[in-house]
Image (cartoon, rainbow, N blue to C red):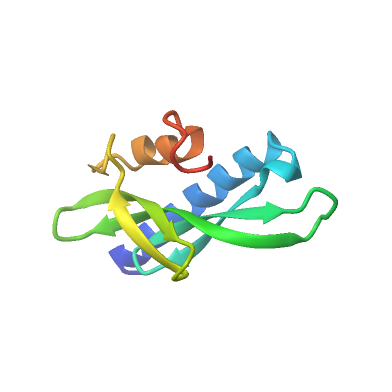
Length: 119
């Protein structure tokens, strides 16, 4: 197994745990957390529900966490959703945009201390 595969599996497992932890403590009306695998990282997704429904009404990207091989660091980005065009612009997370410590970046996404990702 290549190093890249190990890194991908590591981030996917950590993303899965983040989403499980967040989903346990929130009612469905507040939205549910999910993730999608991308090359050398993940997108974190918030699934939105109508008040009287258990089916997802729509989903929005909230964060991107990727391994940057050139820097040997993880990079965390915040989604800047453009609803009119349906496109997403990614900007570096202003409080901790890069780190070699995956745990520190995962903690930022899970706890969202600045209410940037999941608000």
